[in-house]
Image (cartoon, rainbow, N blue to C red):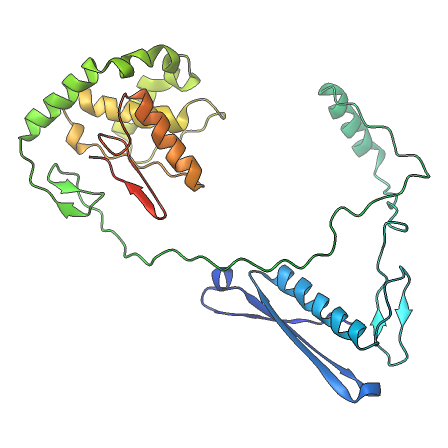
Length: 293
């Protein structure tokens, strides 16, 4: 059967979020009818799979397509069912690679001490790992529409988390001094220093702070586990606190997942001897927000 599916975005202005619709029209002269199918999914690939499954189910229920036998079948009405591979005939196809590429692969495997598994015996049957199952797509989730936040100079009377002006009950000097005193007296925070000092990023602390002071944009690259996410924000906060500029420090850390965001906030708050949302550390994820104070 020809696979000339026609794709159309559900919302042309936002095709990546609204999804795609796949449609197919095919005449069946022997039955005197025209087949018309339409399916909608989050992307073109899934929509085409649902559409192909609908077409096959329709033809099979009406006797226009026989059951799967693993062979290419052409019906009398001109509709052709392409060959479907079963576990019995889904044998691997040999691939010829240039000798230099093969030598590079074997050299790399030997360098990393990776042993190749033995080839399967000729009589071993191959099993299809992905059965043909129809899974209903989950409903598209869209976050609430938000307006753009205009940039402005940091100041001690504006709360960037609540987007509103605040009236402090004490002077900025007193608040900065209190933040410095609490930092020095917090035993949990001091107890975490030996562990934090062993992280690779601690060796570049002074260099990073100097670059941040002198540049508007600083890109930091490091290995996983070096402390980029949990330590650099603390370096910046401590630097501002010890220089009596605690009220001018706002640090935003982004994470790709909800759990990662809450875990990072809990980790940083624990190292600083604080409770999440009660002092300098908070988080904001969908349906759950604990703003720092």
